[in-house]
Image (cartoon, rainbow, N blue to C red; front, side, top):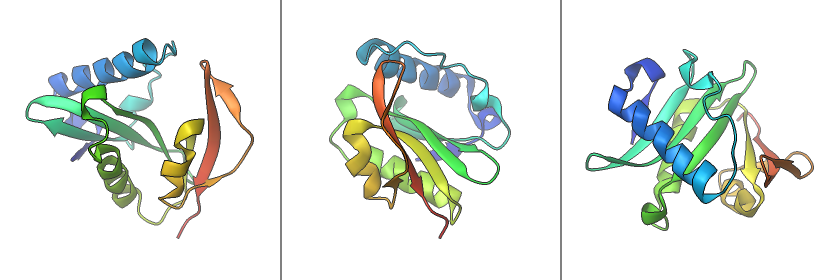
Length: 141
């Protein structure tokens, strides 16, 4: 696992990160959305990256939303799924955030996964970019 701000990413890592998110969210899940939202560039944003050799196989980002952190854009390549990489990403993200409150919008079928990290559903189901989500929160420790 590698944790980096945007300025610490190599140009190859930034390209691979955007390509992976595009391949999974936009192409595989058929969810066109504005991925390049500017938040990757914020100084407090941290990107958690998992590589297999030179290949980026998973990533997520941690945003600083002032009073709390926000985890999002959690993605694993289809070929790397089922190997526990998402758990490793989350462990790295949780270590990065520490004791702060964390919020996320989980795809509905992944709420159980996030519950394993202390997240609780905090609102009604909603559809974002054609995919059902539930807001979740892990209270500050």
